[in-house]
Length: 135
Image (tube, rainbow, N blue to C red; front, side, top):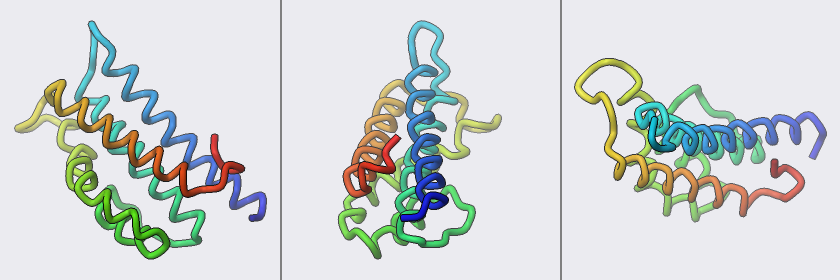
């Protein structure tokens, strides 16, 4: 793998790692911001999957739709299909709580489920990428 590709791949993974860390910090009691924290869960999963796609030189459009990204990733790793339910769970959190509207704040249970889901995508992506690109 050339250095440019390795650096880009690492950058995607670092951003995903930072999104997970941000979600954890924003959800900390007593002053939690679950609306922002759940957004970072979606972002962590999205960026982790995009890192995997970069590794495989798979182009992708600008999208927050995890189902679309997983569809692309499945071409290279069929086990991504086990994350389709997570995609359905997390994709709406890219925008659902970010703007005024019907939904202002997720419940603690919604956040906890989203964090667990994002972390499982993160762990899986790390498991199928070479250690040399891990942050």
